Image 1 (cartoon, rainbow, N blue to C red):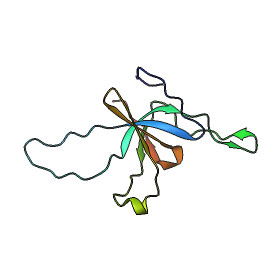
Image 2: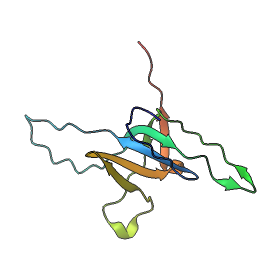
Image 3: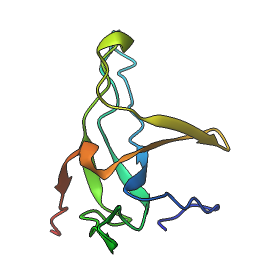
Image 4: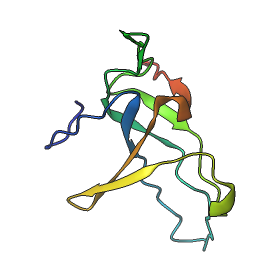
Length: 108
């Protein structure tokens, strides 16, 4: 687990992501309706069981990922995130298959 003071143990192919906090400009008024789409993986489930074997999880705690976003029109949703709040911190519980890519941070 990556720097959290509680334990979440996702089941099967689920992961827990702490989305980035966005800082909007204080000089220019911006109407930002873009949904969260980047964050850090906090916890990873053991993988889905298929024919008695566990599927390997391609993401690990600490990975910085981009994930799909939910449509504002809930009739057309295809991603199913669950929000979880702990000590005023927001977390998203999702399938690892909702992750688009993992960003590797280069060291300078």
